[in-house]
Amino acid sequence: MHGLFNRAIQCFLRDTYGPALWLAVTRRAQLGFEGFETMLTYDPSLTEAVLAAAATELNRPRDTVLEDLGTYLVSHPNVEALRRLLRFGGASFVDFLYSLEDLPDRARLALPELELPALEFADLGEGHFRLRCRGHVRGIGHVVVGLLRAMADDYGALVLLDHAGSDSGGEVVTIDLLDHSHASGRRFHLSADLG
Amino acid sequence: MRAPGPDIGLGPEALDRLMPLHLACDARGHVVSVGPTLAKLSGRRRLIGAQVQEILALRRPAAPATVEALRLRAGTLALALATDPAVTFRGLAVPSAGGGLFLNLSFGIGVTEAVRRHSLTVEDFAATDLTVEMLYLVEAKSAVMDELRSLNQRLQGAREAAEERALTDQLTGLRNRRALDLQMKALIGQGMVFGLMHIDLDFFKQVNDTHGHAAGDHVLREVARVLREETRASDLAARVGGDEFVLVFPGLADAARLVRIARRIIARLSRPIDYEGRACRISASIGVTLSAYYDRPEAERMLFDADAALYASKRAGRAQVQLFTRSDGDTDGALAGRDIA
Image 1 (tube, rainbow over the protein chains, first blue to last red):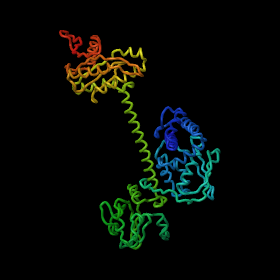
Image 2 (image 1 turned 180 degrees about the vertical axis):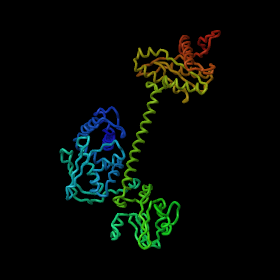
Image 3 (image 1 turned 45 degrees about the horizontal axis):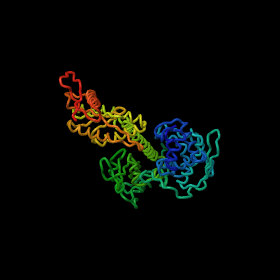
Image 4 (image 1 turned 120 degrees about the vertical axis):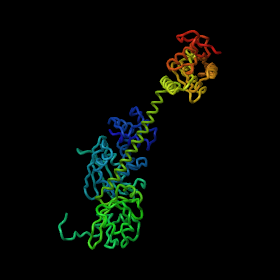
């Protein structure tokens, strides 16, 4: 498992619940070290151990933890770089949705060894969309729900999101766009210096 | 490629969408059309009817972008914004009907600067333009580089900590045998004079036996504190065995001064050390030698000699210091301690 995923979970837990919670998670998961490195590779079982430990420590369902992780990835100032990279996907929320299928290829341009979950997008018409996600982590669809919710906020779009279980193609996320310019959203400049 | 003859029939709006960085002028250099992004960059309110050189300047070599100059320079043009020369373009000019010119521009490698200075957004680029992809890559790469840089810094910190541990005695925080060997080798290599003091605690075994190992560890840490306080920052204090210590004094070649330091250390170590209300009593025997005593100082030899002087102190009744000396008439250099007390 690429360290980027593990590091993302670590930063989410640390930034949201504090360093003490993260330390408790490392102990419960029996990591034997205090933190992940973004640029190293780890055994996938460690990711599962950390997620299980976090769910226990926080006394919250694993799915909820994953969804909050997705929201954190887009909305927390410490990971602003990721929000910016996602905003390059398009000028509107719908453009952004369409760009999601390109996301794994885009990510590989920067980090050739990075395997993002495969995303398959379908426009069902009249503002209804469906996204299938297939990744290494069970429940990746919940991360996607949290992430899309935060991105919709970012674009100022009003959406209904739902994790509709799994089928043979992977986990299914449904997206109903109620209003594509509900609020003004956050500004996005192409230059990082301007935000 | 297109069929000869009929006009393609693109209106101004189509031109603006296809080529947001275009500029068209008539035969006398009056601007007749400007793409929306170029208009935004120029910052001028009235563009139609202005002269081309009010909006663009030629580079390499620098010159006003008059219609004549543009016509003269064949092929790809190097251009800049007349009002902001930091914004540069590559351009292509083709003749248009009636002797005018049609220019289409793109940002060169300086695109990040142009985007920053003029707050450009996705909408300012044609949908077919790869510039936005390039900006994405620049940003993704710098995010990756930031991560690598911080990883390198953490690894460097870990390496330094590991090196420090490799030279430190974990119990007392003094240097260890390895650090001592490196230091002596360095001083000998530089030809610097130095004093060497070998210290062995007296009655330490009794402290361990009577009060336990925790008390013994506490005593060793107290000894370390005394040794640190009685030496300069440039001196080296090492724990080289259970209750043995070696001090190195770079630049010190004065035997009398070393002996004074040794006596002060003995006096301080002879005071009872409190451990959880119990008084632990030790003292110290010390042997001293100086690099100046040797034609060609060697670390092993000097440590051996300091050790010999130390045992002379022990034999003489403990809690004293002896200076190493060669016994008279002993051609083998066999050693005896000389009590300078």
